[in-house]
Image (cartoon, rainbow, N blue to C red):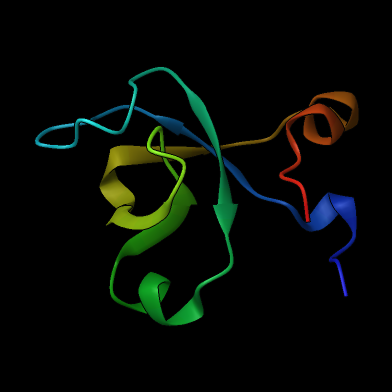
Length: 76
């Protein structure tokens, strides 16, 4: 069952050191992964099209308007 749209989280990439599949200044949708977050990582789909874990410090959380969130939603 899909989460309500307002529960989607988005982050802005501010660092991509040693990560060729991340683009600085790009917004990514965070995929739920409580275990990874406990360890300081975020799971998201990068430019390779696959989901991977990245250091939380490479991103800042951003709040997007509802229209932008809907436009950026990943297919489920």
